[in-house]
Length: 270
Image (cartoon, rainbow, N blue to C red; front, side, top):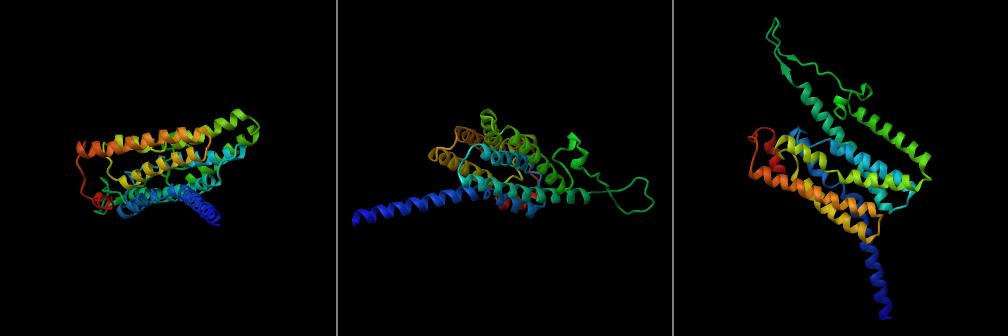
């Protein structure tokens, strides 16, 4: 009786641990963006956050979902991709609204004006359908991002449907999915390098990236996920540590004067 009770207890604990791990995989990737989202809303400034992070995650998770049609992987990873896509669209919506409102609020005084009133600068709209590479992923409307994502999904899904019987294509698709996700921090790394500062970027977000990616790597190894998953996950951890080094370096050796306007609240948020 005692042995049976012990086995049942162990079984229940194993089930509980697996459910907790699955829940962490599904929702853990979203949590790092909560402090960044709140930070942008509070300061009404999105300059410190690279929207190319959203692009990388959208592409990676769309490809991962398509990869599942060719090679099965854990269901929690599928739900993680779906929830991450929704989260990135929410982040894009906020960043677009903040950036456009900042542009529209910019005013100038006309040299030829006959009165003393300020004129609003007419900012030209940048649309996805215009397809100007100079403004790629810098559009003025959220719907342009949605159109781009839908167009990419349709093309990728059609190609996947045609080549689904090819093992080489399926494995390449899986590698592209996880490798793209492994490059998640690269746009933020480059953005910090361009700004010579990490001001406006949520340090909490990067710390959560690092802990989440470390946990994810272990999860992939324990669940015997495809090799592409855990190799690229290790690469992602390395990029996270590179961004944390930027935080240390630019705080210890500042490259430009620290502003005391809208970013003061951002600093408090961190």
